[in-house]
Image (cartoon, rainbow, N blue to C red; front, side, top):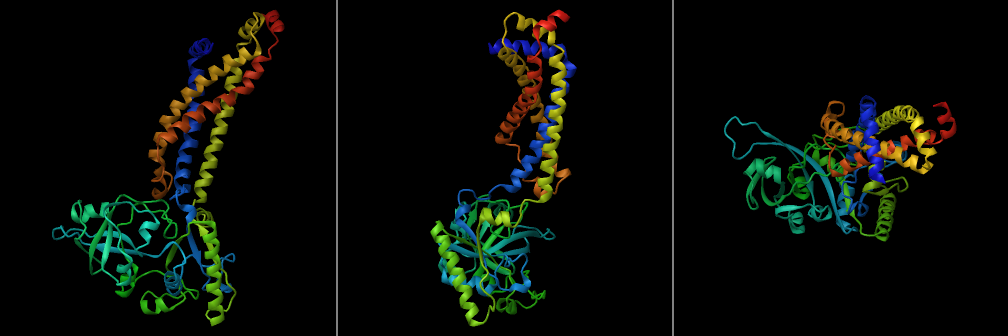
Length: 437
């Protein structure tokens, strides 16, 4: 029976090609606008490490006091004093303090006059790599002993390895970063989670180039130009030793806790730590700590830009407008065939048969609109950087999931839009229509 209704639908659509094309264009354009913005929204709001995000937590300790709180919240980064205390006491399964590093490096295989390579890396501890499940091409991360002995070792990315050594297994080779020589112990596979949830949840266009031990970086002034936030607004960029002793915050921190009970115990530990500092006189105020997992911290930091949400709502509104226009066109098309409907009803066709016939026709329109929507969506995803920041546009992906959703949305939306026109057409009284004919 479906094949019969499909044949009727194709015949009907061929009789009015202009109207058919207009409806398919409306559906395709509306669906494409919606799905293009959805692809961007999906990219910026996706869980960067979904298999483990509920076990990774960001601790916050209030080192500034009530007079410097924003909405009652403590700073999102830690002082060096607090970060090192948490590392020493080690109450988590795995944990690491994290500091960003930017350096200009001369490629070892370069010729005179070659431009420097602008690199971005992080100073971390050895547990950073298993905690965040970094994938390795060659070698591995360094050991806890390397942290303790402040070893000059480094893990580099596959892309950075290609730039510096021409690819291949570079484990054991030496690389110069920030006027220090480091022995390469590992080369990671491509790893660029968005946002970079392990460091202030920023969106970055490229993966980190290298990771080196934070203990070595502190001992050898590799972080001497680190940016920090201080309660009094001062800058300690020129006095790194004073920064280490101060209550300025500059270190990101992440801890792995493998159960809700472990997370609760860690919260109690943070409060006990802050209470002890209160008794010692360092923090005159009551403990004001936070411990959020990755999804909760994403929500707290409002990582998804408001402009992306607004653009998605506007695109969805455009889809609604296109559907309203399609409803009007379908209503005019179906009611124009009242005579045909009356004859079918007089010959014994049920209202269900009328519904099936016209919904099949609407489904064909939906499939056509969906195919156009796929084309428009692909163009939209490739061109979204024209109207949005490149760092956000780069997160949009036209993948099989988006392809399937586009087709499903087009067909479903068209069928929903057809319900009222089909209902009106099926209510045509056969006797009156035949008499009028």
